[in-house]
Length: 510
Image (tube, rainbow, N blue to C red; front, side):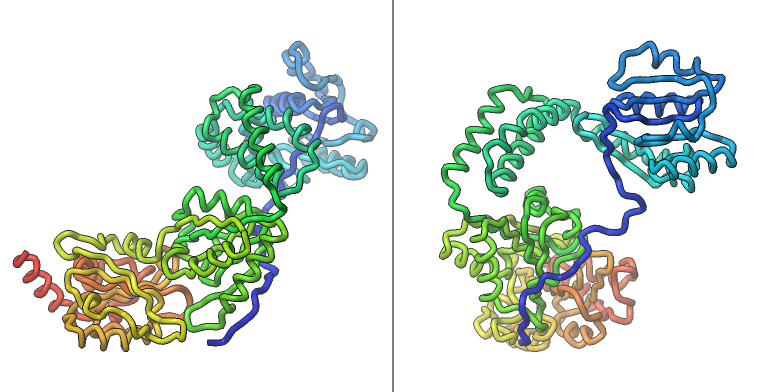
């Protein structure tokens, strides 16, 4: 097997943005608003809530702002009963125009840009340097949603959904974070300890959003920080995280939490890109590629890199496809961390077998067909079929077997398990890229499946499931009811009339 070195890839940590969301500090700063429609009044209310020194040029409709003039606000409001002029834009932080006439809108935009201030024309996105999104207000916690002006109603619907998900009590916790931050900063803590404090803070806020972040809560969190500070030796930590079979929605909450607190992520080729999208943007990503029968980094090199980074005080997330404890070499990496005195934790993931079974809609332990579930590897350290497998157990008709990464060795596996007494008609399904949008399946019998894999696409993790618990899934495939987008054509599928006869006989005998 060809080896390769770990490498930091210039991978994109964020997909393309239609617009860059920014949060402007407007307290005491001059902002100009032109217009007097209901939309302009709402923009004025929004800008005043942000503390702006707002100057409205309302022409003959200054009375539209009477209620705002009579109501206390964070900012200050001056309403000018005249039209705007270019001199009004001098020293302005933002310029907003609710202007219907296109020629006037063009003149306003030109004047604003000459004055060096960003400009927005309501409902005319082609003139806008910035836009107003839908807001979820838990100030100082603020969430803004933008559709780049393409579908404001859709943005409002998303806002309503987020409003329902964010308890109102988070506002008090956000204010507490603002109030307590100077005390954390005054300790001159190393970055890992500061981050650990705020992670504890965030967990507490999300666990009990309705709780009052009072002095008792403050003292509890700072006592935990004191303990961390007294025991911290400068070393970081390692978290082995299961990325699941591919679908990012199958990640556990604990896995997402680890990804969002990582300083460095060491990930395998088999990890789906959508999973990395959920990681902390600032985290350094390093590919430590491990693919079946392809160029791979040596395990010793991965262990050494992981330990070296943790010794620098980093939180290292070792991200593995599936579950790290199922053929993921987690044992060797845990031993390396223990030998170096690095704290290490394990975050399990949905295994490839579980993901494939869910995608197929089958129970791997169906009580009519299976008494046992067994996972085996399709290759050993040398890349060949392991010679110490229990072939008697693998030939048990009452077992469901998941064979991991068997593409190159399945023919030899078939020969050995049939020689051990397994019936050739036993259903077997190969699943490539389980749970991903480009998932592909080949459904057959264990006798015929290895030859059919010649038509299987290259690339991605492959798993073979074998056993009579797959009877229903196999029958559905032959009948053509599986979506062609995630399954091979019927030309790939072996005739399964023998499967039906055999399964029926076994069910009657049970």
